[in-house]
Amino acid sequence: MTTRSPLTVCDMAWMAGVIDMRGKTRRVVTPTRKTPLCILVVESRHLPVLRRMARLTGTRLEVGKAKQLSDIFRRQCVEHCPEAHQHVDKVLPEVGRWHVSGAGAAIVLANLMPYFGTDNAARHDFVDQVINQIPLKGRGRHAINQTIDRLGRLGWDVPPRLVAA
Image (cartoon, rainbow, N blue to C red):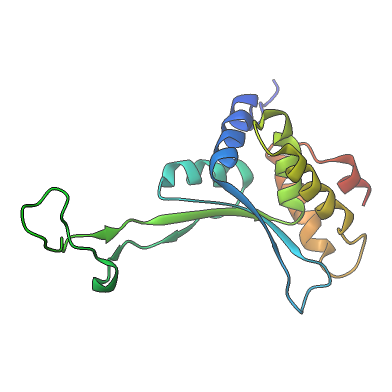
């Protein structure tokens, strides 16, 4: 009896659609790193969507608490009320943030390439940049190996260039 991988073609197509609509890639440069940190991020108030993405990638979801909107940012209502006044029950909803960085971002994007509808050239460049800056050994390599193992166990195909590194 074989066990089926938790990652399916439908999962990948669904995730590509979410990233196509809401995903952003970032390159963070810090003085403590030799190379920029490449991050794939999706922020949304639709927490079930982000929870599913976190489950599919074995990552944690960051959730900001709901907040009362400050008086500074409130505008007076003149659209549907007869007199201009401020609605005091305005609350900013919980917003979640799913992200994967470095080798994990390259693995996820490389697997989802066939399912994206837009911006594939920029995503290919992002994946190439991440893979080309992966250290072969030394500082940081242990975390890269853990990411590769985690995503591999979840059913993600690891690009051969990452395995060779």
